Length: 396
Image (cartoon, rainbow, N blue to C red):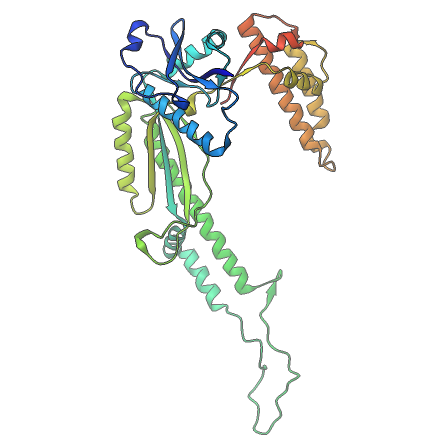
């Protein structure tokens, strides 16, 4: 069954829209098409809805790469509002319906992103090297290390007291001298743990200071920023300088910046300055310019009756309810089912999350009815009403 895959929303500039023909094709090499609505234009291509997303991880990755290539190509000549990867419609008419029902949000977002790009900055450091530097520079840690070294354990054999006289039998019944134990650890072990704790506390403080400087330097030239996830430690990268052994590279900074194109050279210069300033401590990874994926904060979904009905039943609501009714039901159940009230019940947390999720779903549904269809409360949860509602949710 053929449908349409949406890549992005761009401005509908009339005849000039075709001044820059598309330099690439879409997924499955399908030609790119324009579906205009007022002053917006959706960029789409034909897609086999039965095939798309059902042919394994390798094919999915290839489709995602082509999706990104299309949006990068569009970015050369247009402001791009990238759609979520995998957003499909039944046909051109369905694409027009999506544009109509979400016009205000899309137009507002396009205005906000006009003339701007996303730039991603990541930073890494060699954690063992950092810990060694801190240990060499911090006097209190040096003293603690010396204390741990001097507090070595005495041998577990031998005896205490004066030397044995010649011919005197060795007192095998003398108990061996053992290290003093405190809370199950030897004093030496305790001091080693304390040294480690001080090292990692100092490293966290240094990391916090460095990342604050990086963000302050870059945010001067950005309209907005969005923090991304940090990857776990990478134990497979070689040590700096080609030394023996393997390094332990830690991801310490990952942030996307929304930057005016005219300020991009200044942002580049700030990155260069940071790279020079911290070249012995930090490795930077600089990605972009990209479409503003991290700042396209709208999620679109056709109304799903099963999801809405399950949420309604979770909050014990009738088939018609106002937003105030939904809020009151949520507050009543949240107060009754909060995990703090049932510490002995391991399922209480799951029930509380289900209640919260139900409230979020129904709140989005009611706002969509009001904003796009002009429906006034109380709102209907009947199948017919739900399935003709297009739900828009801000994800940030």
